Image (cartoon, rainbow, N blue to C red; front, side, top):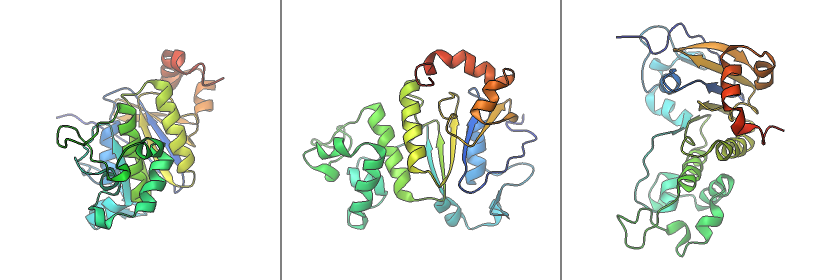
Length: 239
C-alpha cells in the first residue's frame, strides 16, 4: 500500500566497495532484493551491465550474485558441503580450505576430529557439532567466497555480533575482496570507513552520498547524526 523505496537512482561500478547504511526499516534489504532480481520494481528498471535484469536468464543472474543475508539457513551436512553448497564428491577441497582460511575459520575446523567431514547440527547427528554465532558468520562468509560471484553483498550478516567484532569481519572481508564489487549493508557505520562510497538511506531513498570522512567532516545530516549516536562503539578503533 505504500512505497518501500521511492525515487531512487543508484549506479554501482565494477570493483567498487559501496556501503548502504540507515536505520532498520529504511529500505536497505528491499534494495538488495531488487539488485539481485529476487523482486521486481513496480516502476523503473534495475540494469546489470546495461541490460534489464528481468530480461536476463535467472540462472545467470543468481550465479552473478553472492549474498550473505542476516537471516540464513545452514543445512545439517558436512562443513565441506556447506561451504561448497554441493555433495561431497563434487566439492573442490582445496578451494573450501582456502575460503575457510580467508574467513578465519580454518583453525577451528582443523581442531575437529573429522575436519571438513565434520557434520553440522548436534540435533541431527550424534557426532555433529554446533558453532557459536561468530563462527556461523565466518562459515557463511566462506560459503559466499567459494561461489566466486561477480557481485558480493553482505546484508547485515553480522548484526548479532558486537560493533567492534562486526568491524573486524567487514574489514577482513574487504581485504579479501579488494578488487571485487562488494556492497555492505548495515545500520551500523563500521562497514563504511574503508568503502569508496557511502549511501545513506532514510525513508526509502538516498539522502546523502560521500566517503565516510567527507560525511563526518560535513558535521550535519543523517550520517553525522548516526555517527555521533554510535561513536562510543567505534572511538577506540577509529583512533
